[in-house]
Image (cartoon, rainbow, N blue to C red; front, top):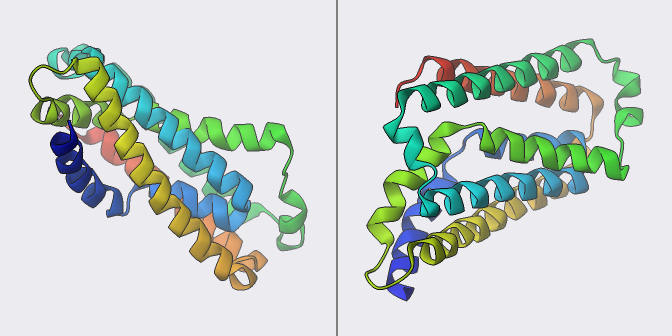
Length: 209
């Protein structure tokens, strides 16, 4: 189990460092909403990753690779969700008055929960995460170990690596807080992140397995 966990950690760690949708969401939250929202988004993404990992270990996500209909449905829903989020962020970044940006930050439990939900929803609606686990986990499941247990352990390993990476991103954003908190910079971040989400959504919609 130790050898399989370390081998998987090396592969998953490299993939974690590659900038992608999750990194964009956390960075945007850190810049525009602050540490609480950023960590809430990161934890939400981690919850989605853990669910996908456990589902793959249980054989659920195999359905995504075996059924074209299941994959297409989830891909379509995920693409619509990402495009909607992207358009919303672009609209807010372009239309929101600069003077009201500071007042727009909401640290209420409901707002923080919303950041968590967006992070988890974005991850769960991305079928490529499920396909990744369905493809990768069998290669790291040692003989004699229950697949559900080992798959869950590997998903936790991936989660820990992700949280460490997100903590680095949030900390760096905190160091540059005085510059990043400028209303104009935050508007640009919202717009840029919106474009990234829109791009991921369109790419997902046109992608094959």
